[in-house]
Amino acid sequence: MPTIVQCPTCKNDVVWGETSPFRPFCSKRCQLIDLGEWSSESNAISTPLTTEQKHGDAQAFIEEVEAMLAQNEDSFFKE
Image (cartoon, rainbow, N blue to C red; front, side, top):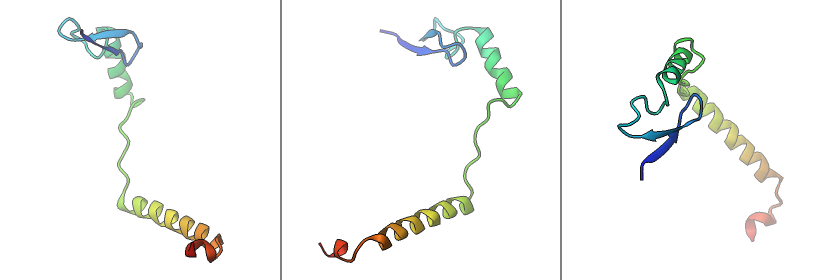
């Protein structure tokens, strides 16, 4: 049984195989629409987080956990 995927542009079903030369697109038209979105920068690959952003998020998370732990009674840790 052939694999069926959805065209990223119009969402029509596309057979993933030799019978669909524009796969994953259903047609040349949909392929060109997608290309136009990339060339006009409507679509873009996100930039990876910098080391500073990663550490900032981790530090905020640690501080949040520490604040939650500080709110618990001492008996919470002894059980």
